[in-house]
Amino acid sequence: MADRSFDKRRIPGAGLIAALAFAVLYIPLVILVTYSFNAGSRIGKWEGFSLHWYGVAFRNEDIQSATLLSVKVAVIAALVATVCATLVALATTRGQGFKAGRFVQLAVNQPLMVPEIVTAMALLILFAVIKDATGYSGTGYLIAAHSAFCIPFAFMPVRARLQDMDTNLEAAAADLYANAWVTFRRVTLPLLWPAVLAGFMLAFVISLDDVLISEFIKTAGQETLPTYLLGQLRRGITADVYAVSTILLAVSTAIVTLIFVINRKKKPGL
Amino acid sequence: MIELRNIRKTYGSGASAFTALHEVDFEISENEFFTLLGPSGCGKTTLLRVIAGFETPTAGAVLLGGEEISLLPPNKRPVNTVFQNYALFPHMTVAGNVAFGLESLGKPKDEVRARVEEMLELVQMLHLRDRPIAALSGGQQQRVALARALAPNPRILLLDEPLSALDLKLRKEMQVELKRLQHETGITFIFVTHDQEEAMAMSDRIAVMKGGRVHQIASPKALYDRPADDFVASFVGESNFFPARIMSNSDQGAVLSIPGLGEVTLKGETHDTGDVTALVRPEHIRTGDSATSGLILEGRLENAMFLGIATLATVRMAHGQEISLRIRNTHDAPPPTEVGSTITMSIPPKAIRLVRAVSA
Ligand SMILES: Nc1ncnc2c1ncn2[C@@H]1O[C@H](COP(=O)(O)OP(=O)(O)OP(=O)(O)O)[C@@H](O)[C@H]1O
Ligand SMILES: [Mg+2]
Image 1: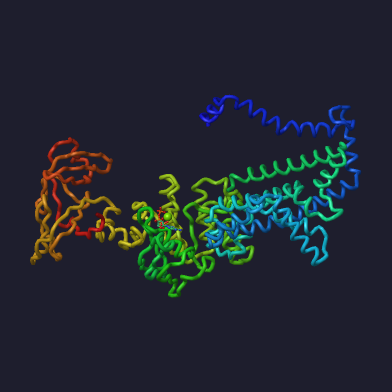
Image 2: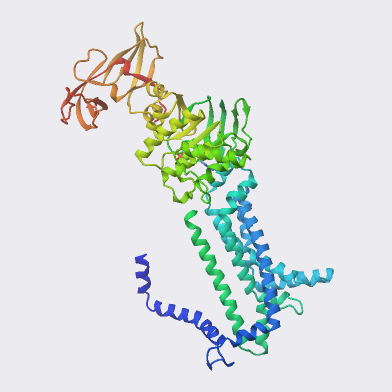
């Protein structure tokens, strides 16, 4: 460890580049958050602290309905994705066919490898066909699409946990007369639970944040929070958009922090 | 009670196939303390896993009380295991772990509670019943693992090197305790170790394994006195091996010639003439010139290690061979200590065993 930091310091300008990177990463966020509390409406002109724009945002019915849709889609999609991801992870780490397991693990990660814009186009075409055939135009499309691209995010922590877990624990349960279901319910699941929760929250954040795929496949009148914000930008920015963005940022940060805390706390008991 | 019939276990297939057990065939009777002894990788764990049901034998059968159980899953076998790393459930308390098997069997609540208490009492862990597993020491975890495996009252208890993680003192205590538990419960124990002293101290019978094969099954004493081959002899106790030859058989017995040592008649024994390996235990060699029969030898003391109760000495013979001997220290005969001095030794014919040579 000591050697490594020593080496880093010796690369000329590394510190400066790092500082720059941090600036690029965080200065825009700081500006956004700061101006969401501005009393006035113009960026670059500070007129004092106020929660005015938060009030405006909360009273805005479009924002209310967009938030509702976003949360609904994110919750359902994260649930579906987590269940699917957990089943796949169980099958590939605990099942018999190891060669197939490798392939399936890769296949599940498809959404990470295919460019999102391609996925969006593909889904658009598929859903158009279904819409023509059935006439259905509800939130089902959004939920289905979000479920699909959330699966790899829910999959990662669950698989990692399963691979770390001592398989002798499950063997011990079987040895003590537990059938497959009891073994799963009383041993595998309780030990896997933190990872499943982490996977769910990760999927939730990813879904909440998605703009590209949602923008492509939402039907007329449907707005998620990100697509609503995008639409507002086209019309010219008002500061209530900052307020909404700041809340989104806070929610995401809180959830990601929670994921870390859950997984750290459970480590020693592993 | 449990019979292993020609068990073979091959892992993998094709070019990467590896046979971990070859034609293992023996039985263990009711109430026996049976030990599998052998070096690392000889297939001890694999054999336990076959008995527990975690592995299906590639060939052969496992019979329990005359009934074939080879294809029964682990949860259908009245066999419980103490795992090498204990494999205690980290999200349950001590009592929760011990109750697990009984609950899986669907025993009524108060019966479970009573039995858990009884088991924790037996391993002296009752006062820690509500502790989480992470808050236990190695020795305490070991006791919980034992209680958990004993609680459902299995017909056979499998123990995979349960003491190897403990320090020497605790280990000795647990050896005594395990013997006591086996005696009190009357359950058949199949115990795995690679420590020969531990095996000798605890077992009714020992199976010595190497490379997936059982070399010999015998009581500790028989294993020591009559090892079947040089591998068993060297694994159980200390040994001197001499390449030798049976010259002839007379009315007196077989005539054995050991190059560099001389000729001796093995009274009452007959053997095929030809090359053999002779075994002499270091503690069976006498020192001093009191000996009148057997092989009388002279050599130079190379090395003497004082061990308290005995002195372990290495003597080099004129023709170059080294012989180790264990000399009992008595109050009136101080052991030889001066390196380079000449030592007179004798090997009584009765101390000579002929063994099969299997290790190169
Ligand atoms: N699942 C497996 N696949 C392939 N080979 C295996 C597998 N399990 C064990 N083996 C091999 O079978 C042989 C016997 O292994 P086993 O674990 O039974 O040895 P052991 O006698 O218990 O050794 P130790 O004292 O080190 O625990 C070893 O060479 C091991 O590499
Ligand atoms: Mg082993």
